[in-house]
Amino acid sequence: MDKITVTSPLLPNLDEFNEMLKDVWASKWITNGGQFHQRLESALAEYLKVPYICLFTNGTLPLLTALQALRISGEVITTPYSFVATTHSIWWNGCRPVFVDIEESTCGIDPNKIEAAITPKTTAIMPVHCYGKPVNMEAIQAIADKYGLRVIYDAAHAFGVAINGKSVLNAGDMATLSFHATKVYNTLEGGALVVHDEATKNRIDYLKNFGFANETDVVAPGINSKMDEVRAAYGLLNLKQVDEAIEKRHQVAIKYRAALRNVPGVRFFDDMPGVRHNYSYFPIFINAEVYGMTRDELYFKMKANGVLGRRYFFPLISTFSTYRGLPSAAPSNLPVATRIANEVICLPMHHELCERDVERILELIVN
Ligand SMILES: *Cc1c(COP(=O)(O)O)cnc(C)c1O
Image 1: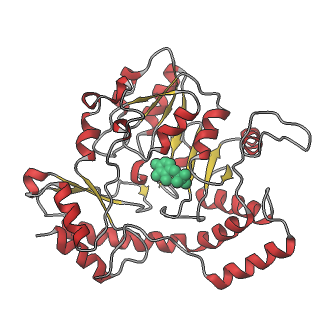
Image 2 (image 1 turned 180 degrees about the horizontal axis):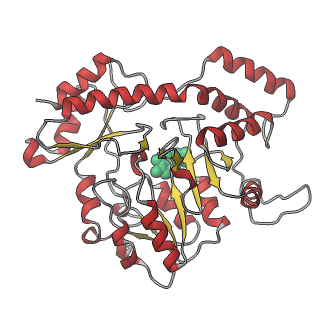
Image 3 (image 1 turned 45 degrees about the vertical axis):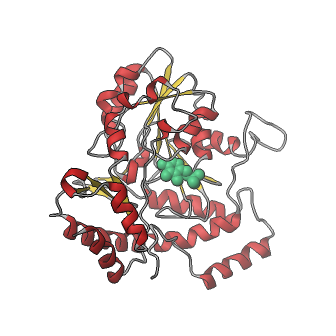
């Protein structure tokens, strides 16, 4: 039986890619802000409706660099319900992550629980738009303003997500993206940092190139996180087809919802009013008592039948040995995240799922 994978990378047309590679080869300019790098930055800024964007070599380094650029220190409030890179970036900056519980309606950090976690050492909040579902950015900004905190959004899942036509990437001080192969839009590996003004863009561009402001001047202890020309060219081609891929994902979501709507014990997200979603993930949440099977029983049943879901995000970051000693990592501090991590399965979701695949997946869940 063919396996149905949870995701499948959006791949550019090989002939078109080859044509672009000929240009790269001819120019002999293969990295350090070449023509395709510049073109991809402008194209992405336009597509995403953001003023300034800086390309990176993956989606973790923009997180690290954002905290560096804003000179974040002390404690950073964040969510345990994410990919480990979110918390790692705080740790790599010598800061202490402080976990705050999530809200069930978005799986993002619960704004009502942030204030109780603020101490005199808190300098920033790092929320995640989990599954591309926007968190309550106004509530978070109000808290940040009240306490003088920075807000850095890990928007790795939120490529193209907008509310009433406005990109979620413009909220807070900075927002990061990941263009990893498993994401809605990929450049093989890649990522970006969205900033609001030109001076900050220049500073980020120095930081991702060892801190070089020009040939002879190093203005900060920078890092190397540049995107090369080959991946920038690949990214330009993928940008042309990402809307079509998102629409195909949307159609899959519609089928999933129609079939699962009346299955007792299975919860899922509907679209939020006014939000342009990217359908990057399709999480379902299993209430074992009502559904009659635990999340893991269903997960392994699917696996045995060649349907590879993923338990994103299980285990919680706060349970990993590196972080579980932190006071805020106690499960009693994170009841909603702890429960949801035990309920979730992300169903296969990508642009290549066919009618038959969706039926095969649903047959295993609807019983
Ligand atoms: C994918 C992801 C990252 C890391 O991105 P990479 O490109 O893999 O380095 C960070 N945060 C979240 C929430 C992610 O899903």
